Image (cartoon, rainbow, N blue to C red):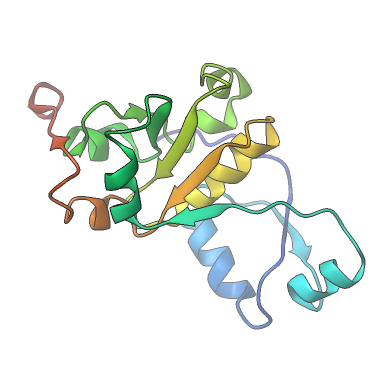
Length: 166
C-alpha cells in the first residue's frame, strides 16, 4: 500500500447534500482528515468575497487537437504506476496523486509547460490540479472523463508498458 501523507485537514465545499459522497470518494484516494464542511456551500464562499481559482476542463477531443500542435504540451497522468503501465498516452509523464503531495516532485514540472492532467475517470485529476496550482503552476487543464474517455479517441496515440506488467 502506498503511504499517503495528506495530513492537512480538509474543509469540504460541496453542493449542499453532497458532503458524505465527497468524503467517501476522497477517502478512496487517500484523503482522510476532514475538519468539516462549509455551511451554505460555494455560494457562501462567494458571498464572503473570498479568493477563487478555476480549473479549466477540456474534453478528450480537444486534447487530441492540441497534442500535435503544441510543443509545450505536457500530459501528466496521475494514476498509479500499474494503471499507467496498462495503457497511457504516448509521451505522458506519470506522477501519481501521491507523488503530487510532494512539492519536490511538482517542482520537476517545467514552468512553461501547458499541463494536461488526467486520471482514470476524472476525479483524482481535479485534486491533482489543485495541488499543482497551489505550487504556483497555473497553466493546467483537466481532461474530462480521464483515460477511460481518452482511449476511445483514435487520434490520441496510446501504448502499454509490457515490461512493467510482466
